[in-house]
Amino acid sequence: MAYSEIELDGLKEIVNVGGGNAATSISQMINSRVDMDVPEVEVMAYDELYQKIIADDVEMHAVLSKIVGDIDGALLFVITDESGQKIAKMMLGSDDNPSNEIIASAVTELTNILFNSFLRAIGDMLQIQLIASLPISRYDFFGAIISSAYMAFDHYDEQILVIHNEFTYNNESLDASLFLIPGEGVLDKIFKALGI
Image (cartoon, rainbow, N blue to C red; front, top):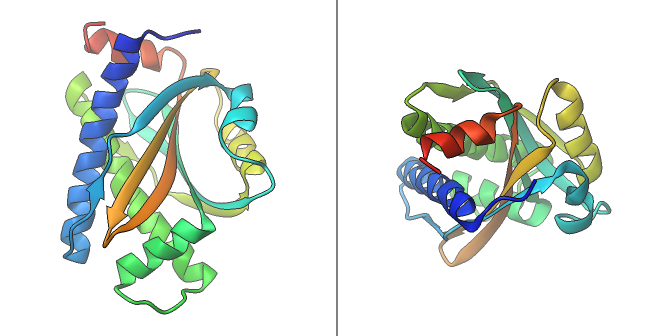
């Protein structure tokens, strides 16, 4: 199913609010400025992910949480190892090379902030309360990550909302992708709430 530019702009605005809230929360946590560029937003079919988003020969850090509340779905955050190391150094305030365990912990902590900021933006718009379940972290190839995300939950839409964010900290760019795996009809509910 194709979505119009107006619908995608509406989704981008929600994401922009959620990402801006997340950047503010992270800035307060590390006591240093974190900026976020305007996100790129695209809705695509599950099968397209393998062809358009991330090569399957690269291992990634990933965090998955189920959406808890009045709508069904899941959030998946994926980031390269290089950006994961940058996040760990940012969160720890150190230039030492972090271990994989420290990277996973830092990415999970940042993701928890990002997920809940994003869900607050959606919840405020829909006038419902949404939170993210306890996150599950994983380091694996992208194909295995996205497949396991779909297998973990039943009755999800074939359309995925793909959000590409770039956070900037001390002139360092942190590229990341956030995936909203919606329950059936969730995107239509969002569009209806936006008056689209």
